[in-house]
Image: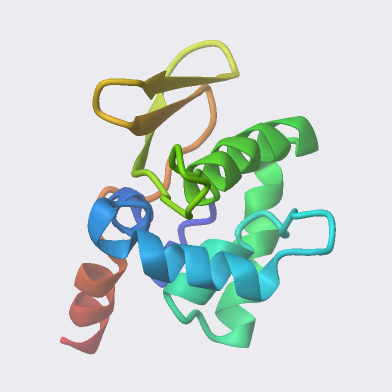
Length: 144
């Protein structure tokens, strides 16, 4: 992600907060707003909507996310969609938390589902990570 525009992007903590237990219902509602008839969504659009990025910020955000090949985007989205659209034993909506981490190494996406905790964990290897600071922290610094 380009350094000149990174201050406009959600950071790692923002992305993980978006899929935390506290924000799952909002994330699910946002997903329902943008999903296609096939149940898919444009990579990055869900986070852009959640954090109310401006049209220009959203455009730059989604363009810079193209550093992730389509296959990687699809794999990450597959787990996000599975977490958000999870249903309980009675068939009721029951989204589950998801965490994402970025690590050095050979390019790969590894996902695990912790049955006991009911959480997904996605590890992204070999790709640039979002900023470590939150979007709010960077926006506050910019105003100072």
